[in-house]
Image (cartoon, rainbow, N blue to C red):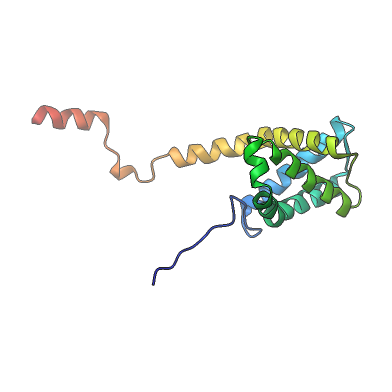
Amino acid sequence: MKEYKVNFNSGNFSPKQKSFWTKVLIMALAIFITSLLFSIAEANPLSAVAAAIMISVLNAFLRPILTMVSLPLIVMSLGLFYLVINALIILMTSAIIPGFSVNGFGDAILFSIIVTLISYVLEMPAKYRRQKKELEPKDETKFTSYEDVTEEEEDK
């Protein structure tokens, strides 16, 4: 009997992983920066961290359900309906977390776009280090230098 494993995780991280908490802190910083720069949301540093954790939890559990339910709308809008899902998650977080508030649905859409852009910029150094580490050769003994290859070809 074959056993199949289905991954419903969709790229979300487990709270036990270091990268999960790094992403939460980056999102908290992005939320706080957005609340300072724009008047679409209000958050202090502590509520920004709580909001980032709540958004991560809602993204892990509620976003897949909302995506499955609204899949036809996502396809018809060429993915733009994801903005509505993000806005709903932000509005739910605003209702749950005291000290974090978003003024309305339009502001929630704008807030999600700005937080996404700021998070992207803040994550760039970590992504660069990760990619650089992945490109480094793992074992130096398996690496054949250019000179060794040309000498082998001359011997043939």
